[in-house]
Amino acid sequence: MQRILDNPANVSAPFGDRFAHVARVDLDGGALLMLSGQVAVDDSGEVVAPGDITVQSERVFAIIGDILAAHGATFADVVHLRTFMTNLDDLPAYGVSRRGLFDGTPPPASTTVEVSRLFLPGAVLEVEVTAVLAGQR
Image (cartoon, rainbow, N blue to C red; front, side):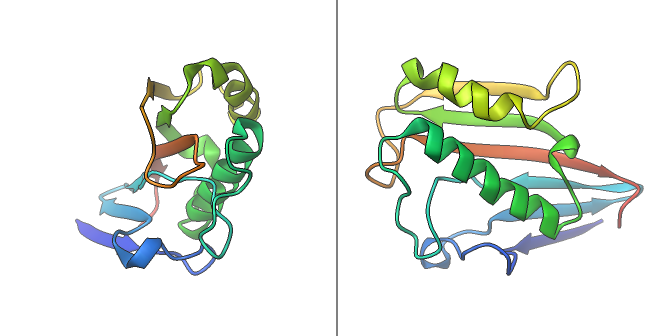
């Protein structure tokens, strides 16, 4: 078993290098990817479209897609999502962005909770994912 903490070059570094974007655990016959929560920021770390759930959802999933791709994964490899939202009334708009990413039935396991705020002002959404890569080392 090998453990790798990574900040892929194709994604902006986390704030102050305080955490890794992804923890990868290589196991016999595959790998487990656990992504840190991602918020909608641009390459300079500024929140994209403060307060706009639709734009932020699209940006968050673009960042997640880039992190997955850096480890040879796609959204088809995602087995669980954990979503933190500042307003559950935004759930339908978030769902539209999310539904387009997962072709399988049923979609991945999921947890969604409302929180009073996120660590960056203007961010209304944070998403963590776990993915499993079969047959990769």
